[in-house]
Amino acid sequence: MERVNFRKIAEELNISHMTLYRVINNAQDVKESTRARVIDALNRHGYYRNERSKPKTVIIDVDRSGRSDYMRSLVETLTERLSVHAFQCIETNHAENRRQFLLACRNADVAVLAPMRDRTVYDEAKDINPDLFILNLQGDTVGDVAIASNDFLGGELAARHLHSFGHDRHVAVMLPETQEQRHSFRNRYKGFLSEMLLLSPKCRIDILKYPLLGSLRRNKTLDIFFCRKKRPGALFCPGRFFADRVVEYCRCHGISIPGELSLLGYDKRSFNQPELPDYDRVVFDPEQLVNWAEYFIMNRPVMKCRSPVHLLLDMKIESRQTVILTGEKRK
Image (tube, rainbow, N blue to C red):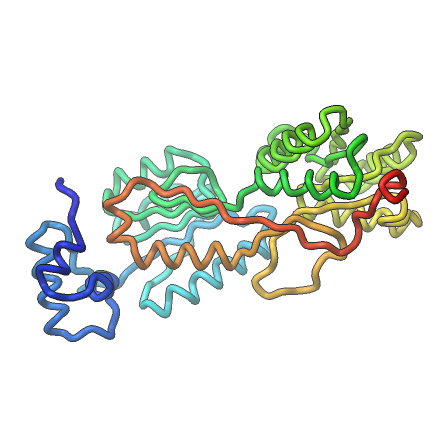
């Protein structure tokens, strides 16, 4: 099918292209006579599907495992935003019930998956409903639009932050114990490793494998780490869970942060801004995620005629003075 030229249609009707987009997005602040002319023109060009006759439905498919507070806030915030635009939101979880998700796809307009890493989910949903507009949040690049935090950049920023304080000879990175659990931290670690070795090719980078289950095993892991004679001067924890455990352990054992160890974590800002962690961290603002999701959903008729979009969100460092200059750097 030939791509629709929206600017040409707007010129044909002698209206602005913004007015055209408002009609496409079912905005209310458009004269009915103008709306009728635009709908007629779009129909003649074989593009427009009049959706005002049926409710607009958005599937919000969420994997809550391990991130329930964050995901609950994400769902609530996005649902609230979309309800303003008269969308009906249905929550599913394709990881737990694939059949329920695919049934919901039949009559839906949009599916927001947070996250989607399995290409077959996308293919099956499109087979059932080719017109379904699919957004992938915090997953891989699969989807009509994929939006995620730039974890590789986050790792690079972590390396630069530690290096700027003189931690360029011996540092450590804490990662999940098993290979499967390590998947979501892969890009953070890759970014950190590549940037640190670029800045300091001779820097020694230790991997501290941390168990996610079993408090005794966790404590033993940290016991071994802190008893080492040649301990790294800085520890990068590419997840809040890890950094929180380190802070808790150090408080219980009288270990000074940052006096005896510089600590750098990794986190998302909360939608509701609860108490912030008291250590330096790499962060991104999840409001960005919701803002872009809302934008692409409202502009989906325009986006459908474009190639898939992969958007990476910016990261930054928030300092709580838990990374300090090394002894050599202070001299």
